[in-house]
Image (cartoon, rainbow, N blue to C red):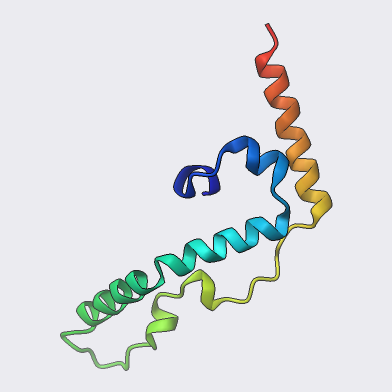
Length: 98
């Protein structure tokens, strides 16, 4: 997501950014599109429940939850991120060898 959708160079993500910076960047990305996503969710919710049913529909936040509505507790540690970076760097070196 950082490289593709947000447009941060891959080298910067792998070598320069710290985990807390990545978390803040992704939170900012989610906040940028927050109003549009909320609007789309509300339109889809109303369209899905427009004709009614015998059962009470769930609240819109349970019907289609967004990432910012959930508590994030499964972030990787800095050591895990460094191990992943090292593995990717090693793979890049192996790929670039003649």
